Length: 401
Image 1 (tube, helix red, strand yellow):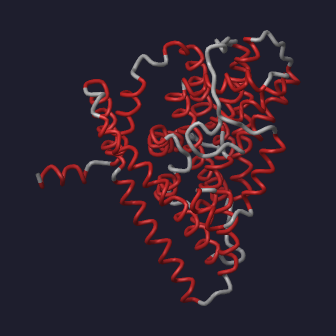
Image 2 (cartoon, one colour):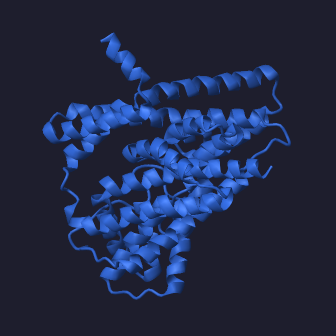
Image 3 (cartoon, one colour):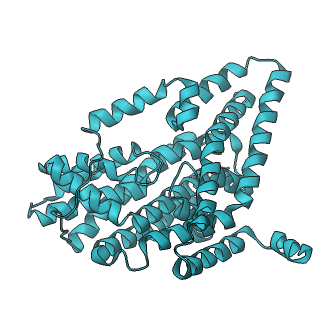
């Protein structure tokens, strides 16, 4: 037994995760009634979600408290890349919908989940989250609130004594170590998540919405493998694919199965550390990206909205499509970093075309039906891009020097 444990420890985490995926798929098909296996996935995601708010607060506050005036930071470039990438993804999804117009059956779908009333409410919620009670923000995983208060605490701690700063540094280090322990359990968590997806939905559960799902997945793949590398190349002026594939392999795989950008924050922070990035930047940009860098969400919002538009026979001109992309970009930035968070913003986009909320919520229902794959691909794109653009911003600045 000791021999096999040693081999397991020496095997790379990615290989161990792939083994977990394979075993989860086999067990999901062969013994779907053995629901206890899915508990592994729930424990893994629960652990990540539980520690992530504390980790974000500790790392951001510590980074800012230690920051000295004149130290390099690439946050402006990172935020610009986040917005550019999300808007580009929105435009690509509109083009994909025009090239492959898809109609969907709406009458058989119904949901009761409420959604925001409009862009104003989305922006209002974002601003209110900034001033949420800091304890409540930690408890409810309100990352906008956590970020805002960690920035306040971090700046205030710059005036504290050296011993106080060391205490904050120790807290950040201890939290990071706990995260490392949880991430090392990823193969077992992924096993449980794959098992649950296959046992609950079955391999053929998505057949009725296959064409819509194919367009969604291929569009996200195009953004991940063409648009994002193009943006990276413009900044780096060198082959971006080694970095792109690294981010997709390490961040994208875990995000695909956790289906939560928030839960994937610890994974992304560890990857940034492995890439040798500046912690003053990535300890802020990664949790921020989990909230506002939502290229996959923009793709989902646009394609599902335009599917409803095509179904209802509504004509769409270029100007309207452009406005839709802007709305999808803004709405996507307000999507929560949890599974299915982007779907509830579809009614906002539908309102541009005069589509009633009842019909729009039926479209949301379609999204939940295909969510097993759609939301997994969306989160993989969103989360891996957080690291990609953070790295691109820093590498571009470093190489200019």
